[in-house]
Length: 427
DNA sequence: TCTGGGGTCCTAGGACCC
DNA sequence: TCTGGGGTCCTAGGACCC
Image (cartoon, rainbow, N blue to C red):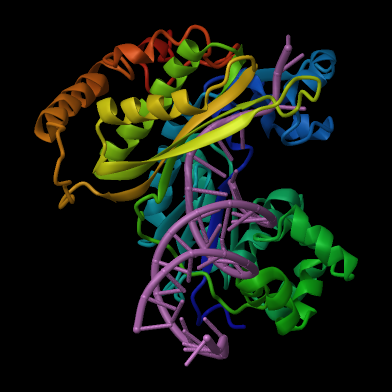
């Protein structure tokens, strides 16, 4: 392996991203245990280092550890996705200055291709990425660099978790690769989840290094081609390339648990109308239409003491659409067909699929919908909402959301996207 | 009557990611 | 009272075709 000649991947990952976003605008949170909860204030999804040190686990249900959180003065936030989305954009804009090839992999991480950078000192360059990103955005990040994406993930992990690396780790020799893989738990490997890890450990494969030593054929047989790819990548053979496109989504989903359980069709209809409306909006945003709508509802699976029911209904549309009016109409028809009285419903959702481009739609022979008119209305609604704020104009069926809305009891202000929430500096 | 075998498409289910 | 949401990819198996 010669780092100066071949393509290198950098993985830049924000540390404790949601908590870090909260801290940017509220520095008094620094040094204190802080957690951010998922939608509905359900589970812990981001933890400060202090919170991790207290033993709070990722995905832990908040209600189970409430006394613990109080006892240790842990500061708790509901998730504020508007704030996090905006901060994410700022981070990505900064990162884009460091490479022409950037793949935004998730809200808080991106791969940069460092191909053709052989005249740069990679170590210095990576440290630069880290320092400037933090300086520009206030968000601390870690950087891992290696010959494959999977190894860059490994490197990033060491950069973040082992203080001697000071946030940046580069795998630039076979010796280092092997040494690090021998310390790297199999379950932490990108592409190996809990199920596969459990399976592999039965065969004595406990570390990433052990996986590189397993026979290829056996890996393919038991972990499929994706597992084989992971093995090759750990060996330093790049199989997963940069994905620079923003591919059209194959499905768009909008689903929520209700703040409290629901029994009545009209209220669930209101919720489903909102989910459907959101799907339609997302479709229009990517200039696409959907052919298929699925609606699902279910009771609370965790409550074994209650009667359980879950059902879903798929409707194929005569003509692909992105009209809120149509999608809400079909979604409600689907809901009506699966709703049963007498259950306590916990969650519902709408998934649209069969997604095609808005242009060049196939029309049906007996299509009675006035598509031009729908399009005009939707354009007007989107324009008004982008100007005055989300859901300022909506269908009557979407209601007032009071009955079923999320619990978000500890929401921070939208410092960066709402003028009323902007921080005022007094001099 | 005989009832092979290769190809394609679709779907459900299971794994994974953050 | 209270247990996230939004995605992707792969495989196996059935239906269907010639």
